[in-house]
Length: 188
Image (cartoon, rainbow, N blue to C red; front, side):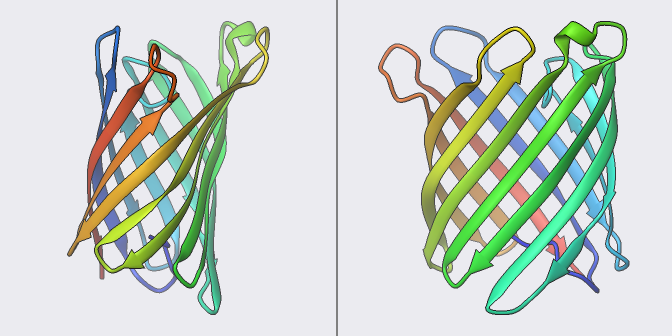
């Protein structure tokens, strides 16, 4: 779903993380983009549990054979993690193929040793109007730990203004976890 110019875009995402050996997590997101491409979002439990984040940015996009949308973002985080975030939402679509990435660097105000880099990426194909599938990758880098790569698979369905994705990450039997979502989007 590209956030293209000259349209209002808004939506609500509700994702649920289901872990094998620990409590699950609900991650709601609300976003809005103006006709002038200014973007704002509000997320909870995304960067860290019990943390709310507000992000602002501007989308730059172009439609064509290869369509893209890039939104540089800055934000504030409050709750368990108090700090700021700098990131980007970027998507490229060519025919039935789509690449999406969402890198973010989070800075903790009073504990710089706990700053971290996070990225969510997806490469998918949409063989029909109601179905897509592909690969996903989460990457985390903290100051004192090496890069952690969590590969996964995505299977999603689109029904009118709704998108229902299912993810499976870390495919070893002892550490699988799932993400299930329902995303509602509207363009005007």
